[in-house]
Amino acid sequence: MKKLLASLTILTILALPLGSAAFAEQQTPSIDLSVEEIHGNIPAQADAAQAMYPAVHSLVLAMTENNLEYEPENSEFLWTSLYYMLSLYGQMDERAELTDDTLILPSEMVRDYASALYPQVEQLPEIPSPISQRIRYQASDDSYRLARGDEGLAEVVLQAPITLASGTVVLTGQLNSLEDGSVLRDFQVTLTSRDSMFGYVITDLT
Image (tube, rainbow, N blue to C red):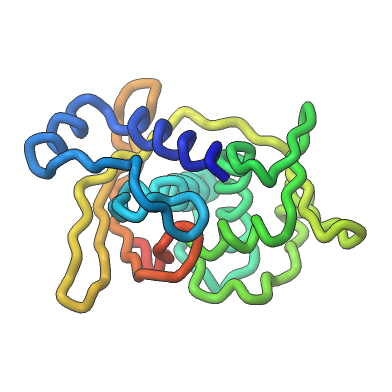
């Protein structure tokens, strides 16, 4: 599990452009990530933007590329965005098995990642046909097989998280093109604390 922690930390740092990094440096002190870990891989002192970057990046990219509305109760929406997260970040998890063109992931790991995207993941719905060509369940070893996708030509830039009096965390950000720097989408994500691998769950995205 250490491999995913290190990789996610590096990806979070690399994903922030210089302007955003400078803003963060001026506004908030740096976070020491060599401290107590919780929920598997995410450091106890990692803020919401760091811990949830993979989930937010994957969800926003899936919605934008597939012209989807935020509908977590819709199985096609659920599996499309979960596929993006697993395809982009699943190979960094030590539980994953990687072949030339396929990721093999135990179902426990898939539920761990889903827990950052959706409030209800105790029983994942069946994979709908539109996404079944890219991800399928294999009952013989209780695992999922994913066709590996590309990383795309866009990045998510997140501002510092805002914690409301209720404890809810709000993240604002942009999906930017890596080709010309244009803004593809502005968004706001609402997070709630959750006892899970990533420490939070997305409860709304506008």
